[in-house]
Amino acid sequence: MNPYANFMHRHLLLFCSIGLAAVLTGCSTSSGNPEAGAPPPQSLPVISVANQAVTTYKEFNASLEGTKNIDVRSQVDGYLEKIYVDEGAFVKRGQPLFRLDARPFTEQLNNARASLLAAKANLSSAEINVSKLEPLVKNNVISDVQLKTAQAAYDAAKANVAQAEAQVSNAQINEGYTLISAPVDGYIGRIPSKIGSLVVKNDAQALTVLSEIKEVYAYFSLSENDFIQFKNQFPGKTVEDKIRQLQPVELILSDNTIYPQKGKVGTVDGQFSKTTGTISFRTSFPNAGGLLRSGNTGKIRIPQAFTSTLVIPQEASFELQDKIFVFALGDSNKVASKPITVTSRSGNYYLVEKGISPGEKIVYSGLDRLKDGMVIAPKAMSLDSLLKARPM
Image 1 (spheres, rainbow, N blue to C red):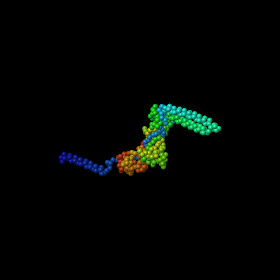
Image 2: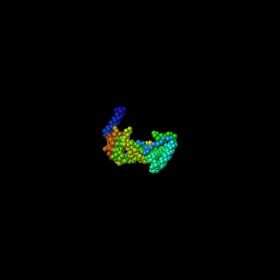
Image 3: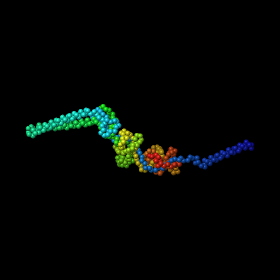
Image 4: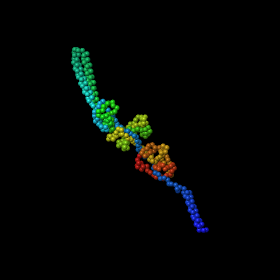
């Protein structure tokens, strides 16, 4: 064999040997260990479900009003002469607010007093006349008809005195109405009338509104569903009994701060509103510092205590066709989706009524990568630690 042919023969044998080794190696890998190329199970955090003693809150929009919002009006007609207070001022009961021009009423009082003096003079004259005729009738000097006539004149004069006295009292009252004082302690509202304006007692617009706010009412409304839940959640035969079971409630102000004083739900409307489909509740809050004013808005936060209930983070659940599911960890670390029934929500947590039991383990996160029957590598996570780090 020539050298060239020998060289080609040796290289052909080497190429065949390498190809055969590759084929044998590939066959050994694919048939000898079929799972060697599969990825390992996902490592996902898992929490153990347990009963917790929790307090949940429900919030409702509220509007605030003083316990007394009084329209300050004049009881007589007249021109506004003085305004003693400014808008927004705090006033005490009996403090002067407005004065009307009192001169016409002073003249009426003077006339009434003059009429009273004249009536009293006539009464004195009639009394003297009766005194003169009584002995004459007694001695049969004149007939008793004259005495009876004099007595009737006396009675009429006496009645005129009483009428004149009433006119004086009425004139004094009207003159007193020209000074308008605060009926209660409170804050002055807007004052639309100015000095010199004609004030009419039957005017639709009040001189101002005086708000007494030592205590403030917060009104909030419940929908029909919320009202049904309220009746089912609290013990008692009547709505009033259930209201008495409510714990003190909190008021969240418009800047999301919590008012330092707690309030008590006291009354409820007797029927639902036909226009809004809601029923109103009233809560009272002490307001000694005057922080709250009529017209303020906020939110009423009503607590409800649960001595023992299952709690899960919302991240550990997913929704499908209006139902809430969790992935429960089963045997061999396989996961299975389970529907749960949620009774309430508090912050980022669900309160579960049924669907899972205490002690069961559920996947906390990574649910979008899971399917029923998948195997995972569970990584234990403490629910208590989560609750401490992110309270309800």
